[in-house]
Image 1 (cartoon, rainbow, N blue to C red):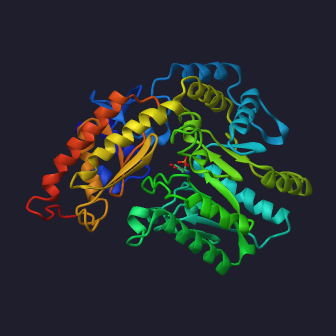
Image 2 (spheres, protein in one colour):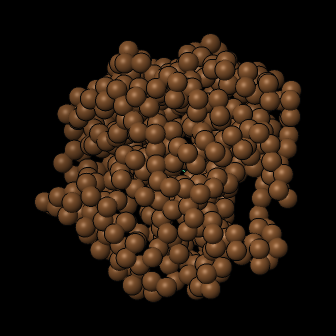
Image 3 (cartoon, rainbow, N blue to C red):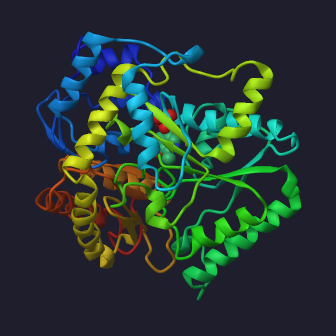
Length: 464
Ligand SMILES: Cc1ncc(COP(=O)(O)O)c(C=O)c1O
């Protein structure tokens, strides 16, 4: 860190409070200031270049220097820099994008509704679901089931859906009517000898018991990410989504697929719902929809959701919900061009092909003394680190080992993120096999660098 009082780092400490950061510790460590991006790489202000192995925040599908997105934004900015969709107004980028998304959906969808972030989209989903229950004359049907370790955002309702302690502690969350069921993490939570199918059946049974205990007539929806992202890249075990969906349809409960990370090619299919045979009533899209060059998110809703909402808005006189920037024309134009690029360049195919290489290379590390589990599909993966392979025990406090290895990884030219002790990999969809090799080699070096600190003489030397 540049110690001069007027350095960018010092000014950041003086003036900027960060998201997802220990605000006190940041005053000592300062920021990593990123200056520019090029393909899968970003560069800091000191000129150090990194492979951005998280595509920013699971989001920059087309890489960090896509001129066509810049041009699309410039064109739209010159023509119509702002308009909205309140009171039956519309503009061409939004109509085009709505049509495109509904046509792309892997299950029949009726309408697209636009918001600015994944959190806003999930809050909107909850409001639509409640509004629908009232429209159907079922005012008791308001509870939403989410999952422990699920991630759905940080606004009051979406943070309540999120099943991670740090999103609830000291925020007085979750709000009422949000229930959390178990994480589908076979490696961590299965009983000895329990197969993936058996584990999935047990979780579906647990879900049904929860529904029956709460009263099926009070449960409106179930929300889940096809693959859990921020909860540590948890890939559902065999049969999980089939068994969960059977329970939901038996009790007439809506299914929301939070495709904010999986959508637009991440798993090697256009949507995570296709990868796992999910048939959602609502799909929540964001991040790779525009490669996050500009903020935009969308909900796709089917007729089961739209029709009662339309009736209710007619009864009341309006659908009393909407965001000033929802479906911003410049963001919509960028999203359209971005989706065009994903299709033109077959980035979904690349995620499948290069993703298979990533998964194979990471699995070569499975025998490393610090590796507990390697998991992932397509271009999303995580390696869960353990201090003791047999017991799966962490190194002192959870996240100590993940933080240590992630630090070495950054020194070795790769930006990743540790979700606790799981190091995540979610690079831009344009990544090549050679770049994957460089990434995995840097990861192996980082594991080796951490090893003497974990097992100096058979026990931990790190005091957390
Ligand atoms: C699956 C999922 N849903 C929702 C969100 C929230 O999106 P945002 O940060 O845009 O509010 C995220 C963000 O990482 C996410 O991964």
